[in-house]
Length: 375
Image (cartoon, helix red, strand yellow):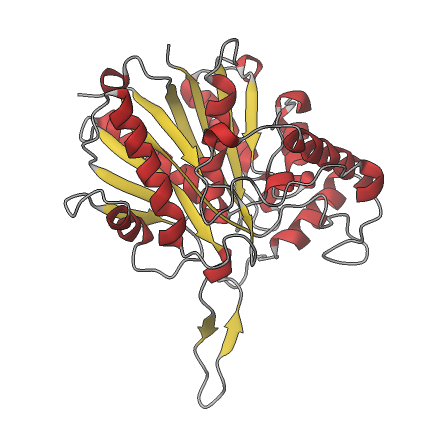
């Protein structure tokens, strides 16, 4: 027996700059308050809070299954299990996708899903030494094996802009819009304040295109990605409840119409959302013209512009209140943050009926999900 999954009770933490506002908090410290907020919302609304599982995305945490540890810290009880998934920058969205599929199957009725990242407390990792050599510290594991390109994401963003002819000026113009719109938005209704931080730490007013144009390239002298038109390294978490329409009846809810993942060229990971979006549109039968709002992880302005250009998406419906360029990009949480942002825009009077969330993923992957207002 299948059930249509819906998303309710969306919450997130403020997004902190790595090494700053949330620097002393582990993945558990950051995720637990958000899980607690979701459960509290369910209880206050009269919805069942009998949780079948907790699924969280995470990239660089300490291991040990952060989802289970955070569930225990949140007071969900020893009988509530937890599982952690890693699809790099798409991990938070992948966690919700897995939860939605399980609810759709009829096997589970309520799963808390989302993502968490604490770049500030991510452990140092080392390659094993060869013979008597000293181990070498690394900042990330490979995204692809030997024989495949495996560029760092900033280098890949520059390559993407170069290949598709996306100018520095256009990237800065998009970034200026992201900064301005985020600075003009009150996000307090979706945020669980933690560690004395009530709001997103990276957002700065007056980041004009003129000011952005003065910044030097970050990943090579001839590159176009800068600290101003790229995301920041960040800490944060987001979660929501994935349940059935019957249990959520009467609550503000987004219905999950479908989701998809896809592989793409590891040399140009920023194009990963394109085949994923195309796949989910085919699966659901939704026309791109029917999508009223698109949230894409703004890892780099060139990535967002490459996706919109490739698919013919109107830039005006993309991240209409700003995105990761202005707010930050806590890798394992960012995909779930997109859904929180969609909920904030869609679950209001006259909000868009259909929304799309998508992430580019290191190593050449993309993930996408289409949601609609449930009632």
